[in-house]
Each structure stands twice: as C-alpha cells, then as structure tokens.
Image 1: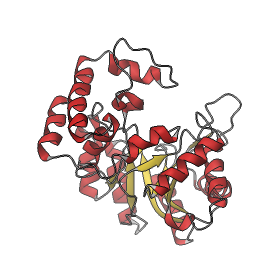
Image 2 (image 1 turned 90 degrees about the vertical axis):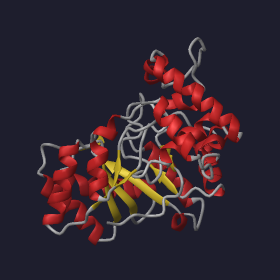
Image 3 (image 1 turned 60 degrees about the vertical axis):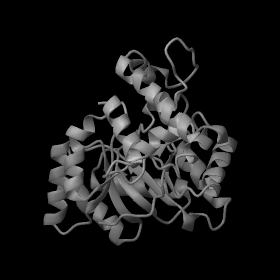
Image 4 (image 1 turned 120 degrees about the horizontal axis):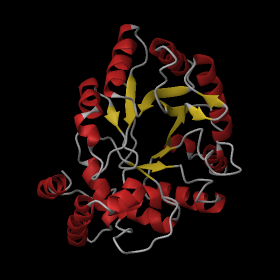
Length: 306
C-alpha cells in the first residue's frame, strides 16, 4: 500500500477547460500551490461532455501549467483516471496502457502519482486489469493505483485478487461522499477501511450545495443546478445548512470550509476533492486547510445529516 502526502484537500480538475478557461485555471492552480495545496485530481474524459470537446481538456491545461512552472511537478501529487474517454473506453489492458500514454502526453510528465480505474469494468477480468496497472507501476509510469465508484463486492474481490497474485495493492478509492450523501457509510466504506484503502471523496460539496450558495427561493445560475435541486427540495438537507451556518460563524470561515472539515474528520478519509472555477471560490477551500472542528461540532453535523 502506497499512500502519498496529498495534503488537506485535493483540487478537482474537472472544471479546467470547461467552466474555467486557461487563464482562470492557471490562476486557481497557482493560488492553490501558493496556499500549500499538494494534490490535483483529473481524468482523461474531462470534459468530453461539453459540445465541441473531445476529452483531455483538463489534462492539457494542467500539463501546460506544469510546463510553465519549472520545479512545481516535484511538489505536486497528480491523479488521473481511465475508463470513460470516448476513444479509450474500458479497462482492457491494451487500452489502459494506451490511455495512460495519452494522459502523460497531455500532462507533459513522465509519470502520474495515482492512476485510477474511473469505473469498474465487468467485461474485463479483474486479474487482467490489475496486472496491467501493476506493470505500469513497475515501469515507473505510475506510483500507486486507485479505484472509483466500485461496488463493495467488487472492491473486496479486487483487493483479494491483487493480494493473491502479489500485484500492486489498491491505495485509494474515490466515491461520492459528503454531509448530505452518506450511503457509502453502509456500503463501500467498511470494505475500504478493512482493506486499509484511503478514501478521497468526490462531490465533497454536493455539487456546490454545501457551499451555502444555494438556498430555497434563491435563484443561482449554475451548470450544476440540476444536481443541487434535489437537495434544495429535501428538508433534512436544508436543515443541515442551518447547522453549517452556525459553526461557520463561530469559526469565522465560509460554509464550504466547515463541510470539507467534517469530511476530513472522518476516519477513512485522506482528503476530500473539491474544485474551484476562480481564485475567489478557491479561498473557501483554502480556509478548510487548517480548520479543525471540535468533536462536538463533528457529532452535531453527523446527527443533523443522519
């Protein structure tokens, strides 16, 4: 098991080349590193869903930023993912290797620190794709491996398959997890914990709902409004905002910082993943870096969102 120093928060790269253009992306990346950020997460598919995009836009911007910032690559943990790129779909060993070469070229680097299976692939034997990941680690093109959104059963079988074949173990798992989306606690999380895998939650801010920006009756223009609406229509989720407001006021920090600090306080979480389109948005994420909630505050939030 290889766990890396990812710092208190992993910067999500899904917005780079999508809702953040090149200049804004560079500014966010610069500010993140200046504030002490250490890890960036992306994927080969970001942002193929945008009309006119082909996938790889996020990796390309990160690569151009790295090339323009000599010495920064050695300071940063970079994670990327394979499975969903339109031209590199699935986890077949040959595809996995080709997708990594594409990612390395776009990122302008010789290796990635964490290489994730973006989804499970039931059409490929787990031994086959775990062997392919292991070969990339042995070749020095990948430092450690991760998975994303695997079922508890498939996590368990992947762990046992890797151990049985003496292959590189899975070090990280990305799953949807936040104050108002806690299904993982009765699903994958116990399996992840038992295997010694570090959890790095995506949708850590529930697509922006847990920033406090969205409130019932308030109109907000956003690409993610369709993801936020179900939370706005759920009385429990809206009530969680009230609790967050109080704790944020007590610490004099943004609501988003408290939401992220609650996640970081969970025992299996290495660091949450969150993205920022602008340096102004990034400030709320940075405020979470040093925020330590009291045991009572953590318990209060846990109870409010149960």
